[in-house]
Image (cartoon, rainbow, N blue to C red; front, side):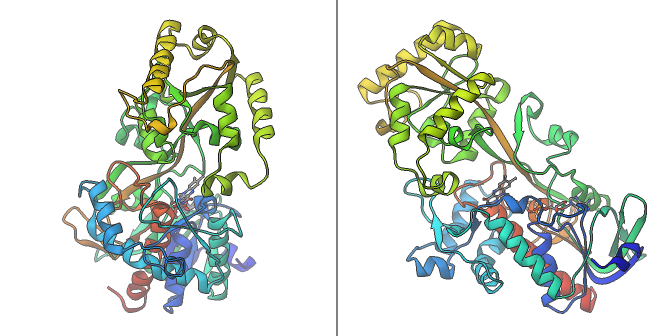
Length: 487
Ligand SMILES: Cc1cc2nc3c(=O)[nH]c(=O)nc-3n(C[C@H](O)[C@H](O)[C@H](O)COP(=O)(O)OP(=O)(O)OC[C@H]3O[C@@H](n4cnc5c(N)ncnc54)[C@H](O)[C@@H]3O)c2cc1C
């Protein structure tokens, strides 16, 4: 941004983009590549990229990388997987748009300098493999954002930082024709024939969370990223947008946000997870499918879970081979000493308990001691019989807790972002309650609903960032068309 631009109050462009994150930056670059003049309004002062800077992986189907690595990830199969998971309550054309654009987007990002050399499984036997990562960086999302910001600069995209979009401007014919924003001391306007909304969801808006997410209020959550206020959703509905897919939280659980070593330990399949009633509540081996295990924790009192194991299970965890994603998180150096240190440190902070007495452990958890003891006895019997009669946990992971001391790690759910809200079609045009496009208005990224229904489908791994970049690109290309030629 040049100094002169800070002082301007009125801007004119073919396309205005609201938000410079995972969807906004691709939208701006895609529109500028089509020849449109673009102004981006971003509420942060310095940092571009929104929550996208945290992303480790990006979804794609039938990409050149998958082809190179001999990985079959048929588009139709991915599409059906997404639709079946949501029982066809999501938007098929929106999901199809993501799946069909995704391979081309990998090449588009590679042209800009991104290096992708791995398509990583999230869990054993995952198929198809779709999560594209780079072994040269653990900051794939941040790299993508930097490359796109550089490209936007080369293409002459103007950024107005510290500017919070407040409302859309609508002309006499009812077409969206710009956006009004506040910079703290001034109101600025950007006049444009088309506007792309990409403001990153509503995780910071408690009223909306309470309205759409059952028992949200009763949880103790860790917020893993930035929390946005739902400005995009509000602005769109003010001009008649319909909503779709409002009740989807992208979440991860169990997590122990204070130590990545302990967080990996709590997700090991040979731990058991106990709620505050002293009961198991899930097949713990499903931990890598972390949105679904988070769903199970979401149903527990207080939405907390304790990962419980004994000394010999701890040693088994330290000796086990790490998955490629875990190696990505922990690195390749030995980690057991660091984990042991973090266990001790968190005992002092009241987040971990180490005790040879199950009675004492139960009291720390807040559970009736008899219940916890009976639960562990039942689990140990299941291990002897090689059959978990309640949760049908894979027998390979049934290891009894018989070697004190016992460990308990208090875990919670991490919230990453909301999904959904503004209803769009496959062109990322915002539609009204009759599914008619609102002239000049587009939405992308997590502000746009449709890919998921009630649970973020982690089997299409990394389609959150994938949808952001792809929907941003689609919105930018179509917005450029409108911006240059009119509606
Ligand atoms: C810790 C973490 C890890 C993640 N890891 C992954 C991963 O590995 N793979 C994956 O697929 N997904 C991942 N995600 C999700 C991914 O980051 C999101 O899907 C993606 O960032 C969404 O892009 P977006 O543009 O919709 O929102 P964001 O990237 O969050 O961008 C929103 C932008 O809008 C701006 N903004 C908000 N309100 C206004 C306003 N009123 N005016 C102007 N600007 C505004 C914000 O400042 C921000 O810059 C992760 C998320 C988190 C939090």
